[in-house]
Picture 1: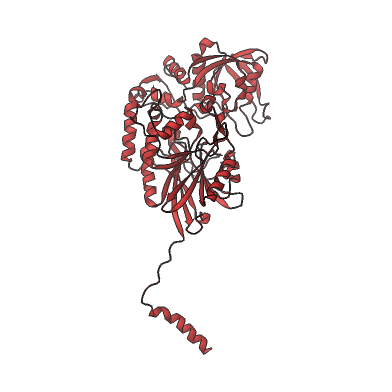
Picture 2: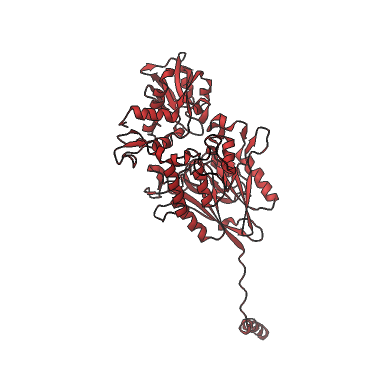
Length: 548
């Protein structure tokens, strides 16, 4: 017993005789912060209306977005963690407001360079002007038709634009599948994959010669490549998303969709997934195929949110310690100082675009929102379809139909700064509504084919209600089986005859089967018409004081 006591005394007494403190243990992990946004769509100035607000968990909303405020928030977030990367989950450009779109989105690329974006995945809108234009956006150089109208020379993107599942027809890669960022000695592998069904949401001519493969196959193949290279910390930029049933930025009230299926099947080597495309806000934990939890986030759109993920990367294994991952969506509030460099860029773009953007083109007496009623019909959709009907009058249409995805903004009363509260609509505001430059086409469909087009509004994956001109009326039952929902179709009060011909005006995106409306590719006697924006401008001019 005495021996034991003496031994214990020796153990406890030893530190008292020490002349130097024990060295602090080195941290076992490296901290890396990822700051990610998605679907900016060239929104340099703060977006207006509902597009410029974020819904909070209690149902209230806060104004958000604007490149000058986005830059300030990013700078603060980077300053908090030494090892930080700025990423994008796609659709940086395309469907953009006029101050970016007039210059082929060069101002937006310049802003992303200012922001320090290191890596992006391509979205569907990166292909709006074709693959060669996507290359120019990356490599720089003047536009082959319009030259350099914003700045000369245009330097191109300082960041990689990835597409692991984008190939040429011969199977060769069209874009880089991954990027590896060395952050203070720690390697982070970034995989980019865009939506496989991209051809259904882009005009066919823009992606001729390209193929878009299965997202999961591309992610898993690329993840294996990175693993072979010894890159264990892996994240995915996925331009595909799910919808939500409300909630705040960090809620996970998902409406399961294509992204959920991809996330569940993607390689367990992937530690975190940023999504895009659906313009939703969510922060979810989803089990990978090995049963381990991983974070999946999306940051709404138009620069209103930032997805922030703080990773702990083990210094020995070089892999992410997922149990220590912390992720959130942060609101890009407008109550912070504007970033001077971003503000200068915005002002330059606005000044150069002003002679065109501020020109009055029409007027309204109330809000024209694109948000649909429960039926799927929207006031803005009605106006656009009526405008396209009038603009193609020389082709003798019976009706006009347009896709809701082509309507990108609201027209809000009391209107623009130019109107000073009198409901004036400017060219810039009209452009924001119809920015794609699609060409109108009028075709002949039988009554049976028209019914088939209307039935294609419902698929097992989604409902996509077309916007129609005033002459077309029909009823549908949401609870009826797919393919048998539509009844009582009439045009100008007369029942549609299944065997009779009808002239139908649509844009070339729909005419090519866009958004899954393949029945429209069967139209005959196709005649061209004006650009959809020109149709809208002509309608605004001809109908001043439009009432919703």
